[in-house]
Length: 336
Image (cartoon, rainbow, N blue to C red):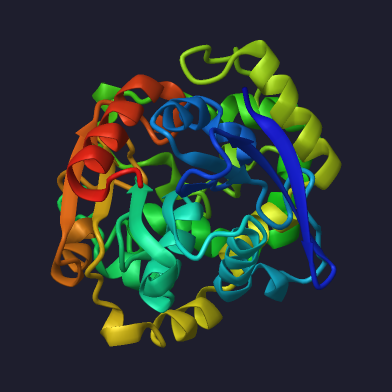
């Protein structure tokens, strides 16, 4: 049964959920955009049963953690510091770090900048040495078979440039009807979309999110990813926080790149690392594209797996994700 806690360090508050024995080895789950600690509700009890002290925080700008009104406050170096402060407060010298979406650059940065604090590192959907190095890095890795350069110069990453050019519009569109925004985002993977350009490749050309409309369309809930009660949890949190903080994670590419370049040993990772690709993730497409190439060059103890899921794999296919995590932990990490 998960319980809640709060850590406050230097005026910054981090809310977290936890499960499992508090004297067990720490395993921290770091969510992405636009999610919450709640996104790991299927993983915490599963890892607790393996003996881990499983913890999932709300990142800065989200849920019950501290909010800020400057884009610069959402740079990766600051998020990494929050996570290390959380581990300190929980009495852990090191942890197994698991990230998804924008949580993935955070756990990869912990592994590359603070390897002494990282027993092992795992990522869902976002490979190592990609988004940490900014949007220019991932544009270089676009699959030009799917995104011809003359038609899609920045490939599926067009939406990231839209935030930089039209931040207020993006925020207003998402906040106009938070529930509809979340229903439109939390969709299961679509096998028919494999090899086709992602919707995110046309955000600027279409005038913004949702075809340039001033609010999200009212789509039916996709129960394969979230339930009615799950939607209520997300909606309440994002109505409270708004999308400024969430979207600000996209506004720090330059400073994030500079930070990533200060990684130890030129960013090479020697601890056990796991990457789980989502077969039907059209944005972070890691099965057929070159997106995983830098990761493979920099990790000396890498395990890779593929789950037949869309981007929200921890919620769409929790059993498969938990199985991959358990196998990797058993074979490469241990629970002591």
